Image 1 (cartoon, rainbow, N blue to C red):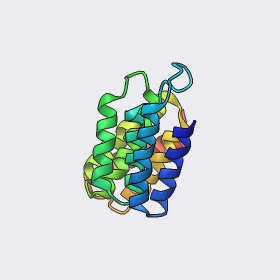
Image 2: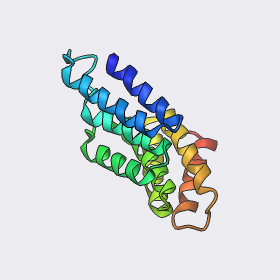
Image 3: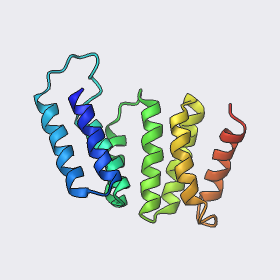
Image 4: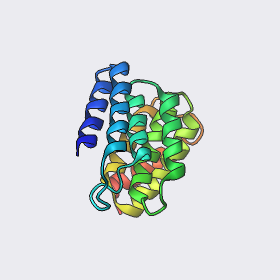
Length: 161
């Protein structure tokens, strides 16, 4: 539980724009995790890749979009296939990071993949993240893939399955 509290503290520093405290607090979380005794049930999902994914979210909040996008790509490459809802959230957040870094076509492509998972799982948190991406992509409607992404998102928001 202490590691989770520290992760929230780290993200709060990021939201406030304090990069040094953000990075220092994530290092504290990693150190605490190293010393923690796993119970195999309640905290089995809490591992280094999970912390790195949380860090990627904070990097995006700090405006370090390229680093955030790399963090989400890394997380997606190691995420077990059974974690469909998490995959959808990470795809949507990664897409937002790519959009922030200026790669709008890749952002639209990843966002489209997340839309598919949102339909499959019915997980509202994915749709929430896609809403943030949609706001960014709405400013560049002529870019490759954006029209298709926005139409797919509109279908699930306006006409949920």
